[in-house]
Image (cartoon, rainbow, N blue to C red; front, side, top):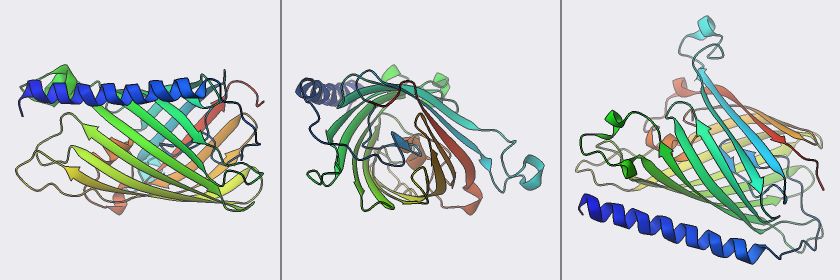
Length: 294
């Protein structure tokens, strides 16, 4: 496939994805909730994955994700990574209806700028009519690093990668909550010897200590499925995260330890080919709601 054909193919995929979301937007404009939605402990994001909880119409949510340096890189010298270099992602999400939202995220290490959309397919309700929550998200991201990172035959489209995520959640009882994310990530260009397309299954489980506090565990299981490399690329390793959630009416704070320091799911899969306990680091998430609940 020539560079021109590859660009046309990727553009077609992008247009198809946008067309799907336009359809979902139109379908959601006149949808009114008839039931009481389940209030999950993790709110709009858990770690670096979206959940099935969207901002309601007119609400803004601000996200801050912070990954510290490796726990074992310098030990006490940088307080187990807390005083070391960090990767940070910040962004905002706006609810255009109770079922559709758009978000923009910016990340430090790869200078990634990400624009995406989320659609709520169904929300679990306390009446038991809908037993699970389901949502779909799509984003296009641009790697903003210097063009020398993209080889000699540079095209702007080489910077782009795309992520689609399907999320399913269920509150099992008043103490336990379960979420499963299915992720599809495609890169227009990757280094030689790497996969360009990944799929991942990400189960997460939370146990409430109270109405506003919980412990959680999350495992991301990525699988490389396509590569243009002549050599066989190494499969990405699992990403394991353990942490705690502290929630208030307007804030959600998550403190965790994880071996996935890249923040963006696709970049984590691309750069995590060998499982190493030295890659674990502390991190935290902050989700701020700029308007009160309904």
